[in-house]
Length: 281
Image 1 (tube, rainbow, N blue to C red):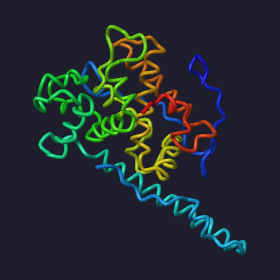
Image 2 (cartoon, rainbow, N blue to C red; image 1 turned 135 degrees about the vertical axis):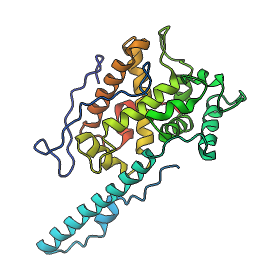
Image 3 (spheres, rainbow, N blue to C red; image 1 turned 180 degrees about the vertical axis):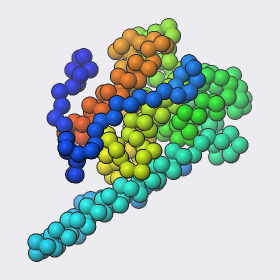
Image 4 (cartoon, helix red, strand yellow; image 1 turned 60 degrees about the horizontal axis):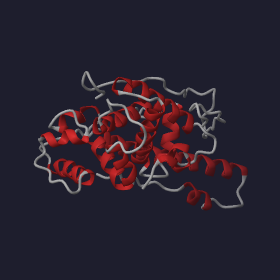
């Protein structure tokens, strides 16, 4: 990626997809939430492809080789479908303020963000300090669901340095009118769901297909991509000298950069993405 943020890339391909297929990068950008802003642990039993390859005999007839190859490809598709369905079940969970599990997750988020500050309640003006729009964060989860809270917790626990840098706006020359941290996080969850077309039964875009391939190999893929995206969004914010009213433009620029990086030829896992290097633990 150059100084201008543009990249010259070699487009990578995955098995069964090429420029003549029905897959194409999605350009849709959907905004939800209030008029001011856009709107348990993931477990995935995913077999590693190398193990399946190792089980194929070395001496096979041409018909046996074809059958083994087809079975191997079928196994991959089955694993990918199972992983996608498990992620979609997470997406379907709405935040419910009456559920103890959800209440505890919200409290956990507060204390990982402000470990030395006592939380006075789940509905309190204190939440505005984290960047929620009001004193009740549950009203901001409508665009992203419970998974958006899980994403924030994963970010805080996995990359605490980057999480607190963004929360407290420690890095760079900042605008007087900054983006609210927590609400921006919900927006990022929603944007990724749209970009990757995760509500569809099967990927309908190149981005969705590439994501699913990585998801089948790493159960943390969506949460990890969230962290990369949040840090990249803040990087774009500073690069563009953005202010409050520029948030949608920054999100669009962030999405474009993610799409460029996903299509790099040597990206086999999220840790290979150039933007992953922005994250600090």
